[in-house]
Image 1: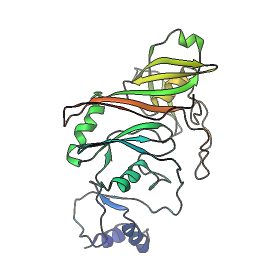
Image 2: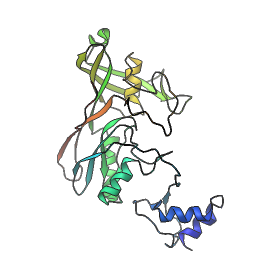
Image 3: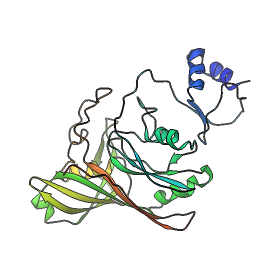
Image 4: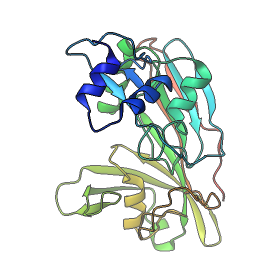
Length: 277
């Protein structure tokens, strides 16, 4: 049985021509990121990835940059608004698929992620057999990450900085927002004041944990929500196609440090991007 016949039989609610189009557009892959053909043979107990075909996709008019690449990893400097991986309305306009097209490396896979709204550093594994070793760096908290953020200046808070802020963050009733709740802390962030300009300040953030929206939640809880944040403290209506690029979230994944588990080389990468301060 061919893969095309398998998908048609397995998903009868999807038109056969739709599956043919997905194969032609390279939307069916194996776990290593190799594009599969409709005529390839079906193999029981194998794992495949498929993407739906988008009739319309938002165009992101900002370019990523490759800062470093060797035989093991690729380090990209992501612009604001660009998702790291495909989801929802985004497929081709994602950092992963742009880099695959640019480098012709189908096995690229992110070993960590940052929000679509956040700019800065993202590291990709090149070889599937090495991927887990890099992912384990983040699991074991062996990576030192530094962010920069523009948020309101607070004299009361500045007198307490540097400060390690801790709290417990869990999902809220709305899937887009996280919330602080009572209980043992599961997040902590070192917050330092870098400089002040009128009513605004630039902060340096060093998270020791990696919860979703951790930095956005922490600064919001301290009364200094990040500039142009459309989720905290108030969730604004989701923009699908007519995106407003004039107000990027002022949060930047600026610096990352770790010892490469394959080469044993100490790595330090710094984003070339700057916030609007």
